[in-house]
Length: 405
Image (tube, rainbow, N blue to C red; front, top):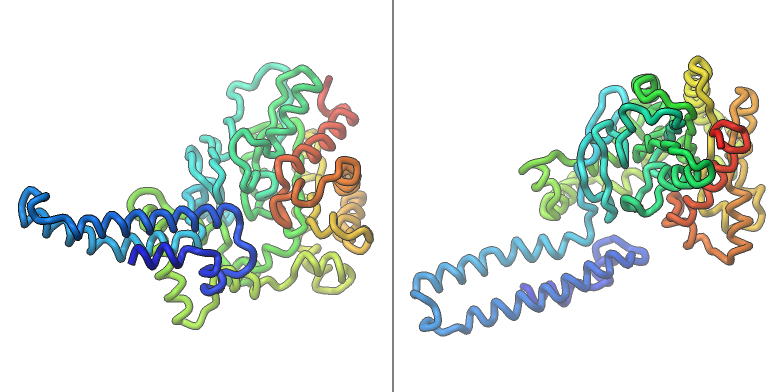
């Protein structure tokens, strides 16, 4: 069986199991590790079987060893063979009645290959200074996985980390930037969270990181009439023994096989089918009624965040993160409809908007960067992309005088 595992651990297996597309570098490394593991274990079992009885302390010991080795082989082989094809859940998300889900406070874990640290306040990164540093402004950045820093490890340059470093370098003062990004959140959650926690954190400036899928992704959730509990809760797991079981490929394999037997699609395929609208609908048919309705479900939450800030004298701005398709096509206006729609709505509300798309396009032309330099996938910026965004936000905050030099 170990020899079979070594032979099967190849990119061809991905296509055979319906996991098509180009495998990532991480997946290719995992498959290579499996090939070597299969070869080594197969060799070890072969040697153990060939050992004469005299080499072992007793005949009974030899028998027990072989039973253990051969009995554990099928279980271990399936676990190792299936692991590259399932995303291991992480214990960083917990259900929340008001918000759907939130970050689990006080935990260090790995989320999609990147080490993340959630502090006791339930925010990513260093905890808020308590007591506040005298005279230091505090910036609170709301958002989803882009603000959180999907696939960016601690200290590798998430947007809030970059922004804090840039503001401190520009002002010479201990500006504090808090990362309130949570994967999968959209403005209805950011609004509710700010109203529950904002006074406790007392920011001087609030930045709302707006991603185009904020308009459409929530439509698949149960509370908006869909049948999805969220990608984050599907990939969450408890701590302890139950969490260990949830993290095994055995659990994922049995779970998906059971879904297939019930006639369901995979979780990924099901999510795609349940999505009533896509970001591309916002770009290519911005005047359709269903697109307008989706915006009407989203913009009041942005206005509510603005109202919370206005009532407390807190400075507020929105920054909108582009999709890579908006970086690829030279016909910019064909894809910029969502940014124009958001800008018009924010002008009516008297809210400042930072749109880094023109600056990012200009930097790519100037530096010779491609979309693969500035983005990790279609949605999530790389540390280099976050650097460009942080530079734009720094210039805006300093230019408006919201952060004192």
